[in-house]
Image (tube, rainbow, N blue to C red; front, side, top):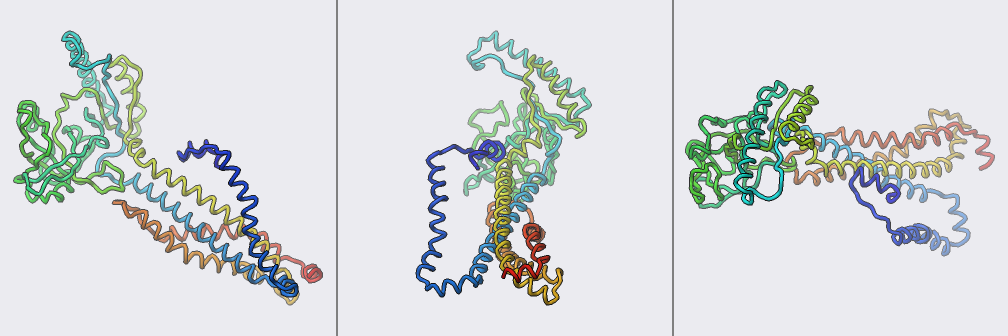
Length: 472
């Protein structure tokens, strides 16, 4: 079945499947011959060594057979409840991560390129005349894009800095050149407009100010940190403590390459997440970047209802500025959602297995109910002869299945709870485990059970006593 539906498995769940004739034949032979051999082995041994009288006596006794079937039914109930609960929780965890507040603006933001380098080679390999020509093209592109973006009323904010999701890179810093070594942090460069666009929340000090922090023309080495960085480095006073980078801070082009002084802390912002929410907020260091040196990227925020207009405007601007038609853009919602593709795949797989478990449970329940209820026709007939009504028969037949379901629920609840807790061990952000998960899981299983056996119970409750007793 999996091989026949392999395109579905690959396209929907990203599970590649390959046909293997030898494997298929071996599995088919196993199911056709070995499985029947195993299932008939015990009855063969038992009845071979039994006397004919004992074997005939056991024909009228079905207690062991019914108990064994109920045991298997209970096992199926446990698996079904477990799979439903796990599927529901995985969906909840995914929705929780997708809609959590990451600490910065994560909606209605678009990023696109507004300049394309044409021709091969590098700048070092080009002739001076080519470089001059390239420089003029870049300047014209930059002036046009800046003019159009500033004039447009479509955008609430815009910047030349890319989205923060892929900006932060690993680095190492120490407090005041401390001897206890450097600690890992995430480091990025941002402009004042970029930080305003993404609505970072200031807790202490200040954010960037172009008139003060133009570090490419002034030899000022400064940074903004997040709460986690302040905690990790044990910073007490940001006006006195400084951070020393292991690598040179590219804060000025007017100093020697080996110059790497401590970095002044000018502000602290609230923690935000740029990685998968299974990870806690990392210590972050943001350094100043002057947008006048950025050419390629445009990032902008817009009112939600004007998304189509914003995309169309940027598309036309790209064609005007570059002369190309291969416009591409990224929406921040899509970029965040892509981080959870693996989690979405887990949800799909568990949902599939939950459906398979429900199907198997229903088939098993149908087989057991057919056998069990048919064995009780004589008892039901005698009860009806003695005045029992349909409403007395229904509880009699359902009670056994509800008892098995109750026992299975007592086993499935701690089993699924433990599995969820184990799954969440490495998650920094966790969706709550609430009773409704188990109520829905048990309720759905109970409903499926009733729907599966209701016809058999109906027939048993309306059986003709005369016909049953005559044949018995």
